[in-house]
Image (tube, rainbow, N blue to C red):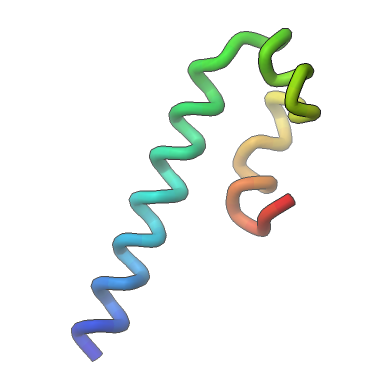
Length: 48
């Protein structure tokens, strides 16, 4: 059980880190990789 909780927490932190990194990019950089700013959370959560 503890292992499951640790894995979920690790996954959560990884997702948060990705969202923060993508949000730090300007709109042109996001456009270059095919991401719209409003879609960042959803794309990170469910994958592309």
